[in-house]
Image 1 (tube, rainbow, N blue to C red):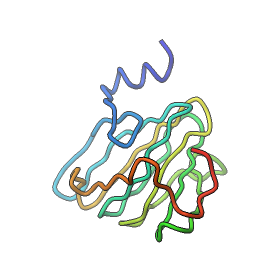
Image 2: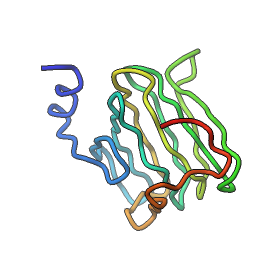
Image 3: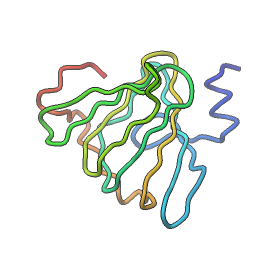
Length: 135
């Protein structure tokens, strides 16, 4: 069994609506935390939530984080390399994620607690108008 299959099975991860696999590991009224895994050739669909989200790198290959506040310009950040293991996504910011290798395992913390009604998935082929990177 591969490390990826082992992680998914051990943590009982399920497919996430934006792509990849996840499992919620903590929830109270103030905060939620999930493990989120993307495999090679997967990416998370462009999405945004109405709350701040902190991404924490755990294992695998570095993770690229694409963000856009205005739907036009975009930025690229990375966690899991150069001693950078955490990134904060401001509420209402569009973002997508992509592993740079076989897989990336991260944690996602949302406060106040995440609810699926907070999630907005972009249209299937949407991306920021000036986006010039292949996901």
